[in-house]
Length: 269
Image 1 (cartoon, rainbow, N blue to C red):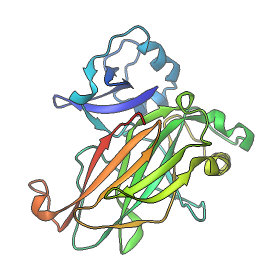
Image 2: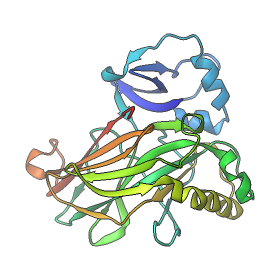
Image 3: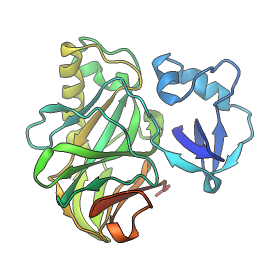
């Protein structure tokens, strides 16, 4: 099951993606929720699956603009790849077409593997951690080159793939490319244990709930320049593309010398 946010005809909605079609759940009886974050917080994952049974798709995937799948996680942490130390990543989540300007300061991008919590999680054992995972997604954290800790864009998507569609991380890889050249490849099987350990650890610090997100950084940051295309891809999950543009080709009304244009593209590969 793929949980997505999207925009169509000026209206923001949410629903499920299957193949090349979208099931719109915005006005579904029994699911009175404004977005997927609100629906998950109400612990309605099984209701989402039931809502899809026997229903015909509402839209073609090519007709909608994908947004961040979860727009309002209550908790969002970045887990540093080297130290596994968590840091707060809360802030607006970028969607397709989002642009951010930095006044003359170089930009850098770090790839991450997003793990979405699916059930109330408080003081759990490492051995039970995977039971609390709803699913996975891709993430890019864009920072200023002068301050690698200050995120200026948080790009999330293309959707959340539930754990039943990706039951094992062993044999899966997160691949990062810049302008088509592979700059990093991370074996997700190698971070399966750190994922479980981190979920258990943070659950002893605070209560986590459905729709909260942990992003596991997979490599160091990569400097971006105007014209660069930064891509994060996980087979079975999807592809997240961030483009850096110069001010001369940025959207009207956006000031500053550098901009990041983020496009979300789902792939079945």
